[in-house]
Length: 440
Figure: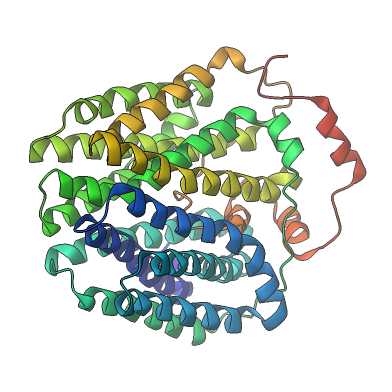
């Protein structure tokens, strides 16, 4: 593992700096708006960021194909740096919405450049370890971004300058890397109808996960402020919650490989609805209750996405898994764009505790919708359930992360990423076979 960390240190460093800046920017904007605006505007800003991430998946391929990986990365990092500084030049919220959209769009392109390099250079036997290093750098950056608020609680332009500094510095390791320039990319087909028919329960879980995680990143800082937390305490609350999402990944993988994944999703959703209930019912809460419940809720809600990804891979052939990941990320992005808006409206009219009431409601949807008796395993792939691979929360990845999944055959990855030919007609015809997850 130490050799892998050394080999990919420049790309991991760039990822860490990007996520440090991104995590700090999200919390900073939430705290700034908490002083003068309501939850609807805070939610709209986060929704704009996720909308940019979704759009960036399409535009990023075009930009990289036109100017190359390094130029695309440099251009996007420059735009993000300028957009971050733009928040300090204008106080108009409509301008901030546009800037957040630009940040999300350009960051997706940056993710695609870094992940294509990782995919290109990682041996098939090392993909799991390379992916683990990438995920660790992503989560570490997000956590450090929250802890910056503990060291520097003043919400001045200094924090925006620090965020811009991170995005400027993330250029350096990519520009100086000795890694070979990746091959040109081609977008993976979404095949919307096929995946809706084949993995409907997974898509439902992914969409609800997007609602929850989008609402958390967008509105948790506002919620903490409404509960009377100081800036330092909000930073600790956010850092502790994100840490819960990281710590739960490895025990979750152990459970996922040994128990029915649909039952695990249902159980996590039920526990999540119960865990969020104390904060949903109380307009005010003590500090210890906020941290304990916040940690528990995030540990459970960050479990839903990787479980749904594993379940979907159990029912989709290897040749389609890169396309599947693109579909899952679009679904997550749509949910994450709507989540902050819906929860923001609830918080505006009914109080801050509606954030956790929203969590309870979303979790109950999964309890009702995703049940073991609805699964037939009709199209389950050979040797399923496949080995569980811990996944990021989709705020830190692009469709190309599928190629780092050790469950995906290397030749399939090469064909999907570097060959523009469509899938064989015989594979496309399997869409007519019906729903593999659901009973007729």
